[in-house]
Image (cartoon, rainbow, N blue to C red; front, side, top):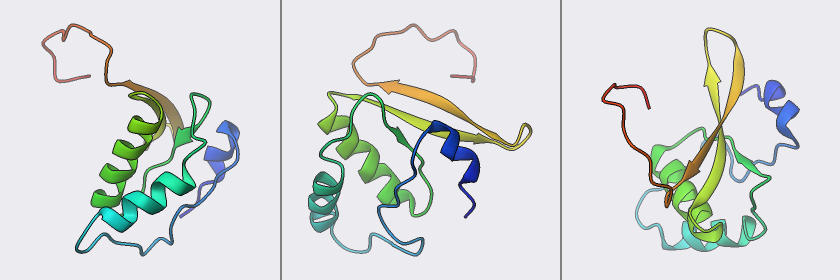
Length: 101
């Protein structure tokens, strides 16, 4: 996977190999993620690729570490670049009725 365009947001650190999968139990994965991401803060971004179960678990762990908040990079095929998105689980916003969030 080419992550060169993500470098404009900072250093890229790989947490797992590209073939990593969550197979039976998330306990060991959660423990390893907590160690690797213990210093995650508002300045950091997640670049989420690979196994959906690992992506979901990583997002949950980071949210727990950083008080419900994290930023991620979303790839846009049309413009061929990453866009930053912010998640705040505790922020209250009204939905406008469309399917675009």
